Length: 602
Image (cartoon, rainbow, N blue to C red; front, side, top):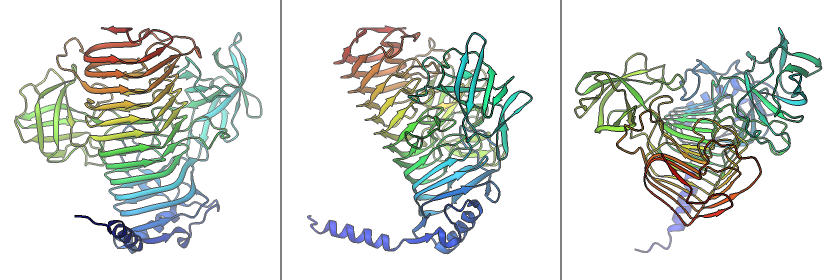
């Protein structure tokens, strides 16, 4: 049946929905831009009133353009356990949206500037919520930036200038970075080329000169510090180990979108989403403030991180630069089986010290069991009949669950001896990562660990320092699930990855599950991986490393060899495979260096 009037009907529906939206201007609640006053208590009270007044209608909360400053004093105090972060509680939160639905927070280009140690934005137990057109930053980041002005390698002394926004003091001959409610002596750092902002070749994480120092002029420090690579003009980001909170925290949300949101700095990740169903990032970035930004770094860890999510994750049109870890990491969390109560019931634990205290599963979720040493599936799939927290309430620090399953358990699971993990297959997402730029960051570019369809296309990976794309899986250390079954990597450009060595950095694309007993493995972990129509510009040899894969295609790719840096990687092969079956390498164009016949198998 033809419906020639359908566009008109849709337009009418859109207008009707728009007319049903109630707009709340935060200026009407005393929130003023560019005032310098603490916006945290004002916005907290405004959102409380709006929740009461809105009555469940579609609402639009508007921030007038300008700068808003947030301090911990008067902010919301929330107990959140956030995956892959430290767990200090309660957290001081700048903007909290909890149990709200059909809400758009419109920033109009607002700059949210935080002070001290805070979680800027939390969206929890919400549905169909959007954040639009705003940025997040800290006035005095917990990473301290310095510039080398003199390097006396023979004497083992480096003189450096401290960036003007950094607060510090020299105490007992130590450089003590400090801010509102925090201080530390940085222990290591990342060095950037002064002109390009790239991580210095073959440097990785370096020790820094913060002890036994003396101030030889205002904001100029001489330190016992020997590193010949730190030439005059090098910029070094001094770091600590803490990652207390991300810039944006999403938890138990449905259909969330972030549009034109930029995180310039966060002490943890830029965005952390856990146990969410459907997330769209459109023009979400973790980035500097343009080419003239005096800073060289952004976040303390990943730009975006998705833990135990489902539905569809879309990340497109973003810029990810200067962060201290990956642009994106998508995974679930293995629980480790701790005991067997009967043939249907197990207790199982969160294992990593930064990943616990939040919902792991629900009755009706399908699961599978993994033998930790071989990373093989043990027994058949099963379904959760009931799940309860044992040692603490869910959301309040739980580490152990008691889980009853619908079907009898495999005889080997939980009877002592071999270790087993439990993977929740319900909370695994489909992923589209497209049209993004990833550049000048530490460690890796993108990580994916989900059995559902994953497409990585039309991205630029430019000097990612370590591996550009990693497909992992680990039931022994990070306890991050799981096996990839359907991955397409196409039409991307990779420029000079592998300038430093980090974990899992075996090639530009590294398929590297942690398997302690690979010789004992009979199954394969990953499968269904296609890498096609990409461009690789590289100064070194390794392009693709794969371990425990059944079904791997590398075709119609262009590999161009350059001499931008010296070759230094331990892996001297274009392709290095360990337990790989049904692989196809065909139709590729190698311009310089070894070609597609350089395949080493171990």
